[in-house]
Amino acid sequence: MRWFSECYQNRKSCIIITVLFLGCVCFYCTSRKHHIQQIEFRSRTSPRLPLRGDSQGDRQKLELLNTFASKCLHHGIPIFVIEPSVLQHLLSAKESEPPCILCSAGDVISLGVFGADWDKGVYIFLVAGISPDLGIVLNEVTAPDPRLLSLEWITVPSVPTHYLIRQSGSLPLHLVVFYERENNYWWHSSLEPSTTSNSQIFHGFNTTFGNSAGAYDRFDVRLTTVDGIWLYLPHPVGEFLVQMPRSKFIECDYQGAQTYLSKNPPKRSGITSHGAEVLYQAKRALDPLGVPFWLSFGTCFGWYRQCGFIPYTGDIDIEIPIQRYSAGILPAFLKVGFQLLHVKGKISDSFQMAFKAHHIHIDVYFVYEEKTYLWLGSTDAFSGQKYKYIFPKFDTCWTDFMGCRLRIPCPTLPYITAAYGKNWNTSVKQWDWKGSSSNVQKNGVWPKKEWQTVIQITY
Image 1: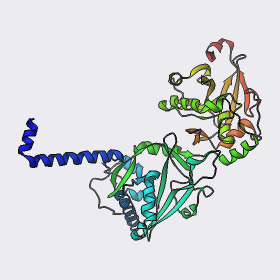
Image 2 (image 1 turned 135 degrees about the vertical axis):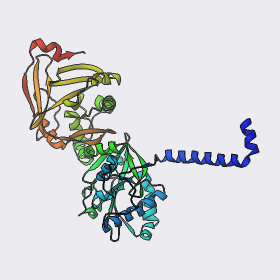
Image 3 (image 1 turned 180 degrees about the horizontal axis):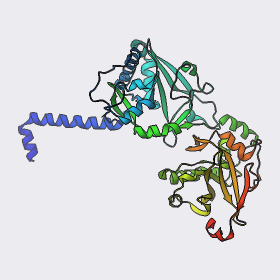
Image 4 (image 1 turned 30 degrees about the horizontal axis):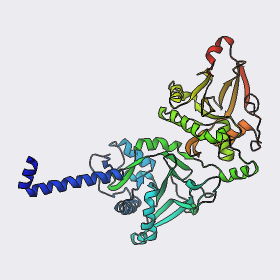
């Protein structure tokens, strides 16, 4: 009551305080809505003049960037920097950084925009005709929308995926459109001519993004100034940079799968009904531990050949690098609802686990690296015989399998050929894990005195 009394006596002060308070509330709400946090990167003792490039070409490029970014900012379209050299300089923020951080990008600066935000940008720059007034030309690249692809729909509408943004006399900007995919991650398209239209406009330009499609953990963006220009940055910058070298994404070959399934109609089974749920459970167990895994054997084969599970297989297979083994893996699987079936081998040799959920087995193999090849092992619980499966060395890529972002061996075909031979596209319904694989060989026998520790069966 005292506050109201004083406020009434000094109505002018009360009004000013109220207006300031409401202004702060509005700014806070707006900032949260657009994930904005203003941060200033300072890499030099004194701020340099805005748009002051190291050369005439740099200045023109910065002028183009400033014009485009300012217009987008004015219309509420966050344009964020994804050029790795620029982000590295901003992250280090040392006094020895170049006077023009954006100039470190080379000929082309790579920028990103979220697809939902760019819908407005398409209207502003391409429909409403603002670009010619600004002297800016936007060359658009499109590709089929992967979010609509399925075994039933392999011909789908296209969406804008890349833009080459140019202005007379200036080096171009590269705008990459990031779309949100199922399972809550960001995806961008490649510039591969076979999957995009008009990608030849990038010929002759050395771009950082576009050699392959990419997938990233979901991130927000933060507003800051870089070289006197208001721009957004992925947040956190460090995590975005760490993901970049491992971001390659490969879409399932739906057309090839459709061709195969037209000759081999799929049948409903336990794994086709509940396999995706089991895989997602495994992901929930391993992701919080930071343990990477990828699809293996028949599960990888099903993705590659038919974009789904092979209905007559009875289990799911995944692989983990033995260097990433953690004592927390077993309790993590149990915590999310798996039942332990067995643990075989040693950490140093042929280590393997198996679990069950929804009446489906999931085999967890650990991969060992030699100088020229990779291998994993398994053990016959009745004889103690060890088996070794040899694969050519490979990297891993992301894919979308059954609505879940998962890793696969990359390139995948050499992996498939190693396990299933050159006739891998022929259905084989009778499979012996000890002898049918093309890459399996005997690898000695565990001494009987060790069986109690190297063959632990719980079912």
